[in-house]
Length: 293
Image (cartoon, rainbow, N blue to C red; front, side, top):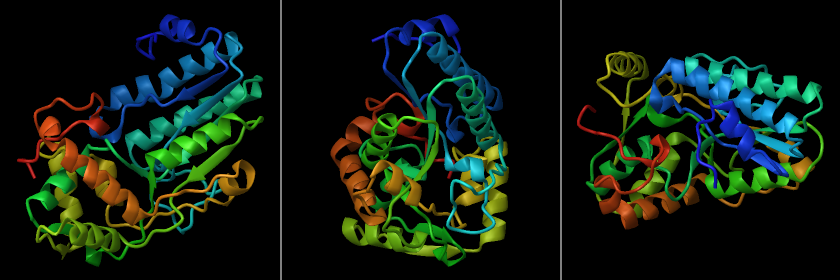
């Protein structure tokens, strides 16, 4: 174990010595809401890892990117050929990381990109902790414009399997990964409310004014949500996963409904530790303050 900062090239180079495969999962996520960190970590840190991997002759690099690179797609399903069009700073920085991957691939480094849809699974907190706590307490859960937007998630276990399979395949490529069984945002939230049995109900809110309020509250620091959440919560987005299936032999195991139940069960089992700040380190694995919402 070598602990260090990905922005420190010497530390990264030391970690890459005698390494066969590097799985690059370091990122400042949208919840950070810090543009400087988005670029210094997600772009410059990625460049450090790629340079160190090339110099230390790492056999394969897997870069975990983000569906944020696509912004709000003009049509679905999104494929690996869909032109990237990020609409906020986090997505732009992650796309810059992808560009660095392609640059180093042209210099001889074997690097592949894996783009996950929104990740769920045991230990996944961040904004989901707010959702789970509201359901635990029996509060109503909002969706936008009826919640009819088709929205795909991916379980962390399925994503890990895709990364491992990509690491075994020689040659630079990119793979979009998501569940193969999913429905609308309303569908998955109503299923979770029924499973929880706490009296929570899904309620629709008008999209335009709510998105405006979400954006404003995010800018002034009154909400833990980031611009990407306001951008995508009420919109459809789902991947075509044919390439990952065909080239990697990858098959996701979890449906949207199954992964939400799995995540909620984990939250209930670990709720006391989560609320007391004893669980997790990253923003995706840490509890968020809810009073501002």
